[in-house]
Image (cartoon, rainbow, N blue to C red; front, side, top):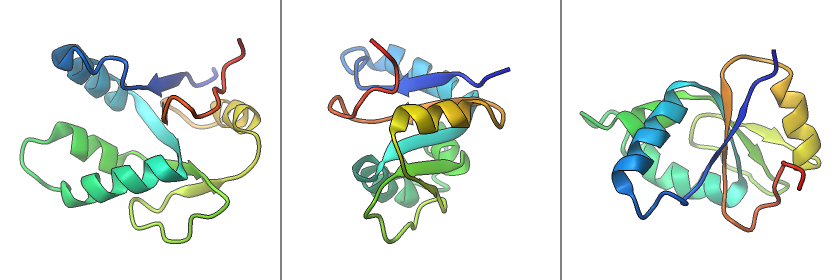
Amino acid sequence: MARRLRPITRALGEHPAARDEFLLASLRGAGLQVMGRVTYERLALHFQAAAGEAGDAEADLLNRIPKAVFSRTLGRTPWGAPAILRGAPAAVLDGLRRHGSGDILVHGEPGWPSPWPG
């Protein structure tokens, strides 16, 4: 069975309780996080520092779930030893969906090219 791609977005930002519930449920079902370099660097700054803080379920899950980063320039990878991905995002994500277990969380900004047709 192919893994599901689950976009993680700021769309629920106006409804913090709904956002938190959605995010934690998504993280609990995840087997991989995929993001671009800029998102990786931003998340790394915050969540590395939050590692081990009591009661921070989001940080604990984000730190534990394996990461993969689309980048041609990322040098240092201090957060979670991510796999570096190269190639067209849609094709790479399609390949990732066919292997492994758990959902694939796709982090990103609104300008990041969508891996979904249409």
